[in-house]
Length: 154
Image (tube, rainbow, N blue to C red):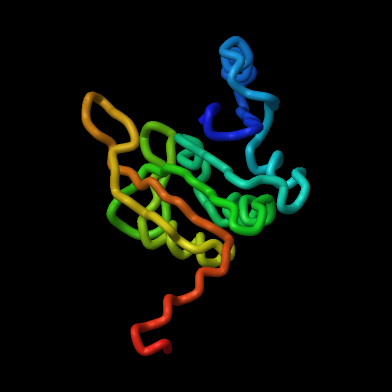
């Protein structure tokens, strides 16, 4: 991402992860803390892009964090994230102490937060005990997507 953005900010609960990120000198700013609290404390419309790779698996209920992302995104901003997935409803805590989310739940939480889905693709998000862990990669936007006109102009 470094080459794709002007400014890159990282947030992690773990001081060791932040120290490792500092050592790599990739980020412009780093913060030790909770991602939800960081987003809630950010100015409205502060970010063009929020990327949460292998982060939302530590949130059960995605609704508060998605709402915070929506508030923190600029108009036409993007939220890209991954979650571990399972067939079922809602979300559940796995034996790994990571949450898995049902596809329908993620879509519902996004809608409730006022975010529109651009992509929700089934992928393997990680290896777990040597096997692919089912997951989703999602890209959402806060922009008002208007329907394309039909050939007749309507």
